[in-house]
Every structure is written in structure tokens, then in C-alpha cells.
Image 1: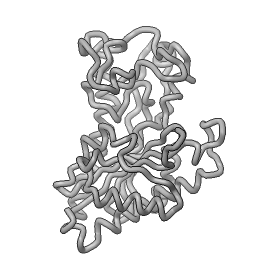
Image 2: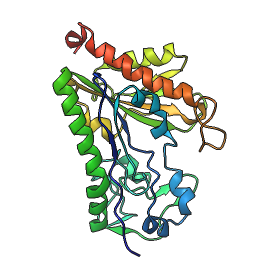
Image 3: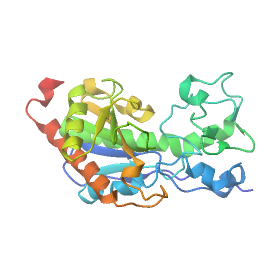
Image 4: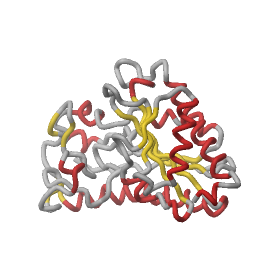
Length: 279
């Protein structure tokens, strides 16, 4: 079967004079035929890895000129929120001798090997050359685009915030929103606290770094010592999706409004006279 390339990300250049960029790495839905042919559980298994419709939740912020980088390649093919060396030998031939880190060991490396609802994802493993093609086609263009947009915003404003948008399954006792700053490693704690205040003011329950402290996107791009702050924001899927967890629910626009408020609220915080002193 002829192998078509994975799609690079969609890049919405900022149109507003606002030092905030959105990142959406896990909502890609473009499944090429060659990927479907290798899927042991079919398309449904791969779709279970998506953050459903988060790319559409950003519509309010985009309509007001906030910039964004949005993955089109599906997470099942290449996970833009993983480092290139987070490989699982169960799916990458000639890769690491043993899984690298907890996420790869759990089947969620740069190419996922399994998922909870469906088990094993692939009929056969891929080789190192195929992994490198996927990185070149979708993973590196994603991160290059994020870096380019952040560089431009930082040059124009001095400080900038990246909001990495995700969704999470509902778990008993878990907050509606989890904001991760890698325990202060990817963003100044005061900015993460401000994000939590904004969300709580909108009526959401919020946790910081528990159970999600932030993945590779915020780790790679967050440099709070240089005025580049990166926050991962997880939204409970039941808060914005219908019961099928695939289509918009009654809370969809409320969640879209939250992302809009976070973008402009963090921009306002960065522009405050005491923001530099806080860093």
C-alpha cells in the first residue's frame, strides 16, 4: 500500500496583540489508509487516544485573534506530547532495549502501543526508519511551529504564555480542570495560580499538577526564567461532550469560553506592572 505522508499541523498566526499561544497536540483525526491497515482494533481503538474535539474548543479564542498550533496527525500515529526517545520496543523495532520511562512502559510512548479500552493497538511493529519519517512529517513541524510562534510573541511582548490544551477522562473525586506547570518547571507558579483563579471564577473546580503535571510540550517550550511560560490545561471530557464522548455536549460552549478567558486573563496578568518582578 502506498504510504501517504502524515499531515503537518495547522498554524493560526496571532492576529491580536496578545502574548498567548494555544497548542492542541492530541485532537488530530486524519487517519491514513496505511495506518488503518495496521490497526488491530480498527479506527475506534485509535480514536480512543484522541482528546475529542479540543481543536474545536479553541474557536472562541481563535475568533478573537489568539494564535494556535493544532495537530492534524492522530496521536495514534505520532504523539506530539512525547519526546522522540520515549519509545516502546513493543512497537518500534530496533528502538530502546527497554521502555523509556513510565509513559512508554504503560504503552503511551511517542507511538502508542496499546490503550485501555482495546488493548494492543497494532498488528505489527514499525521500524526505526518509519518512526523517523513520522517525526519528520508531523512531530518536528509541530514543535518548530510552536517555537516560531512563541519566539515572535516573546520578541514583541517580552513575556509569553503557552496554553497546551487537553482533555481527560472523568474520574471520581477529580477536579473539572487540572493545570500543570511541571511543579514550577515550565511556568512561574504565580501564573499557574492565576490560571486556577480564572477557572474557579468561571465555576470550575481546579487542581494543580495532580494528577497531570504536564507533558513534553510544556517541558520543551516552557522557559519561565526567560519569560516563556507553558501551562498544560486538562478539561474533564464529561464537562463538554455528549454521553457518547465524541460529539459536543451541553457544556461545549462553556468550555470554549473558559479557554478564551484563560488566554486573555493570562495575557492581562503578564502585562501587569508587577509581572516582571514576580518572575
